[in-house]
Image (cartoon, rainbow, N blue to C red):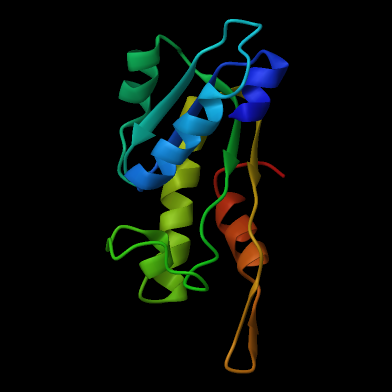
Length: 145
């Protein structure tokens, strides 16, 4: 969202954590807004939020870019909230969350626009789990790559 402000693009941020949103707002407030853009923050579960209603609230019909930066499953637990993807009970549940967010994102993207996902892989108990590949695989069910 800081880059949105610097580049003159309106931006929307969604996070389950109020603390993360407060930190984000504090950092955004430190940035000059020379283009007069809007940055809106929503404290919500990205897998359950009504994205269309969210866009209505900010007066937009669609978005040009979605950047997903989910937790790398359970490598770092960010909260005790069961809706937090870092608390997914297994890889299948985690990927179902990724798929749900991808579907909702696809529905609000302008035609021919983009979704990017920032995610790494996981190494646990001697096993490599290619979360990046598996997440991309889930998203290709919605998007042409």
